[in-house]
Image 1: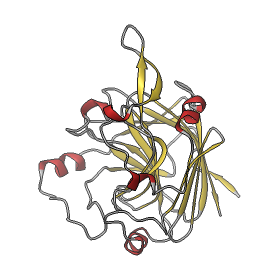
Image 2: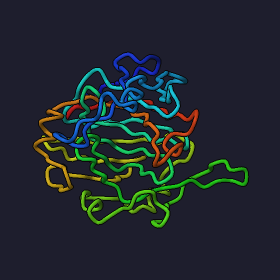
Image 3: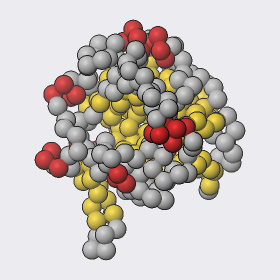
Length: 269
């Protein structure tokens, strides 16, 4: 049975939490909770509102993000939702997230320079970067973003290595993604997460994007047993507003930018 997770009017069934620094992998070095960075991130959970039938996520304090978590937890699921991000935002949706939001399997929606859409990332569980292309914006003569294109390797902020490519058991041809992405409009996402060491599959606008079997992958500091023990068999669904950092600056999240989500539905498998 399919369950609606958003009533289109209120944030009932959801709660916001700060985007706290966490160890990069289970058992990794703990963040300094007395640091200014930790204290700053702990001071805000972002701004989450409902406008025109959509959940809107923004930075409340410039440069600082947060998460919006489902009150309920879920194990094996097929999740569908629509999203409409501004340029530029670094966002995504996590499944099997812990109660602090910063740990889980993320389906990327990095609608920004050197961002990926539809791939995966392992927040706090080994920093697994499972994606095979990055994008940048096209701009008109007034500097207004009007579309996206595939970013050339020589100008990427982060390299895509053979080690990263090997994380995916399936990946769409990047050129096909560019053709199916609807700039400035709502795009539909479907995510399937199944298994103790989940197999993750993503679709955008009905087209299969990527698949990753977390039970078979290898990556530095990724330990499937440690991740399974940390996340457990079920977790929250988390919407992300990213914090800015020295590497990306406002490319992470432009001042005043927002991402929007609606029609969030889950089917337990």
